[in-house]
Amino acid sequence: MCGIIAYAGHRPAVPVVLEGLRRLEYRGYDSAGVAWQMRGQLHIARASGKLQSLEDKLASMPAITATCAMGHTRWATHGAPVERNAHPHLSNDSGLAIVHNGIIENYRELRENLEKMGYRFYSETDTEVLINLVSEYVKSGLDVLPAFAKALKQAHGAYAVCMLSKDEPGVIYAARMSAPLIFGKGVGENFIASDIPAFLPWTREVVFLEDGQIVCASANEYSVYELDRLSLAAAPVRKIQWDMQAAQKDGFKHFMLKEIFEQPRVIRDGMTGRVQGEKVVLPELDKLPVPERLHIVACGTSYHSGLWARYLLEPWAGIACDVEIASEFRYRDMVLGEREMAVFISQSGETADTLAALRKAKAVGVPAIGLCNVVGSSIAREADAALFTQAGPEISVASTKAMSSQMLALALMAIYWGQRKGSLKADAEAALLAQLADLPALLDDNLPEMRKRAKELAQKYAQARNFFYIGRGFCWPLALEGALKLKELSYIHAEGYAGGELKHGPIALIDASLPTFALAPEDALFPKIKSNIEEIEARAGRVIALVNPGSDVSATDVWAVPALPASVAGFLILPALQLFSYEVADYLGNDVDQPRNLAKSVTVE
Ligand code: F6R
Image (cartoon, rainbow, N blue to C red; front, side):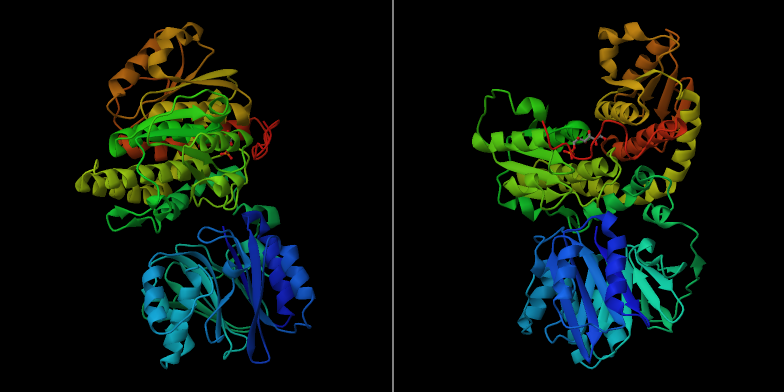
């Protein structure tokens, strides 16, 4: 996730900006840069890699006395993590500089128009297109503010941007649309950043900018405008009480909780640029044929995403699907047929078993797709095609938002291949995309209430020593994931089962001391899971049943979440499971973000 900080004030601006960038490092990045105004010119310095490389570069330059500057850390999503793609970017005439977080979906079209007018582009970024568009409007006679607003109105997508103009010393322009941007009000100095920790040493007074707002700030003044008509907007100033750690966690107690609550944004971002009208566009996969058989290979939570996705890939794309644990796949003697392909899912992109499995697939001639969160990771680099989940850095060791982002990307892949194969009818595709598009708002509305219910249940069940999780169909992989989350965070032994398997052995364990978490939304298999719950209750087992409102399931505890079509219900059920495990672990006083014995990235076999 990119980080932005801009400063206008009385101090040397570049050191302030560098300190701000350091405070945003926890968001993850692969390149960094700063821009500053000095002696009527704009200057930039950029470097790939860590901030130290940028600082080394700056140290070799003549003294920088600027009191207005902006900086950026880039987490590559489009375009390689190299210096030419790092921000800031300058307009062709070097009159404007920009830093940007987000995606301008229609940048290709905007770029083509600008190219026809003679503009040249030196990076693969959408950002460079935006700054030249503003520049074009300035050249046509507009002042900087209306030119900025006019260009932004043409840009579709999500963004947080900051801009400097060589002709307006000491002034910062910034705007937001579906990406975080916060104004920091100081005394004789002002700040703009994508997150509060960036300016916390200097001010605690903030304005949370809303979507569609522009701010124009200098050392002693600032104004917030509505992008639409450039009318002045209300901009209430709030006082932040958080310390640095809490600010990085956005006020949440743990990174895990913050990341659970980020899932609506992750789903929104995952669709941005990939859903255009009623079509899914995945140019990363265009050069590969549509597979006839797909091997999905991964570990842990990523493996569960793969298992879940099989329930979509087979019916939507008509592709036969095997889902396998990477540590098994890598050592198995396989029989391969024609038109087979493999997808390797890995948040980190560095998991040793998944990487070895990818190398094995390539060695036997199976094209490999890497589905990763970390751009530039080994799996992404070695795959024949890489697709990024765009979840932003996941700091908590237990994976949460990464799984939603993988599920979303896999659902889009199923639709994309269904489109190419003609196995998915246009009206079915439109309905699926509409269901996905509704998810972020639904999650935003329901997560706080779900957390309350998770907390009540966690307190009641935290003393259990063992737990069962059961589900069927789409809910079976989610039951596996629920059990994994509980064991890794709370150290309570938990097993996930397909509900139908209970009677083949595990039911022997059921008694009053072994509770079961049953996933029982009203989908096609509801009557089946309902009778599984009855079998457990008949043996004195306690059951938490996750159901839809109005359900006639009888269980020890019922947890109702809104009803959704089966193919997207997982996006709501998953956070319920995550919240339950989180609350149990927190209640037990465990180290939620760093459970014992676990590493975020398992780079050894
Ligand atoms: C569970 C968890 C692990 C990872 C697994 C694969 O919360 O985080 O099970 O999912 O180690 O990691 P990646 O996705 O990085 O390959």
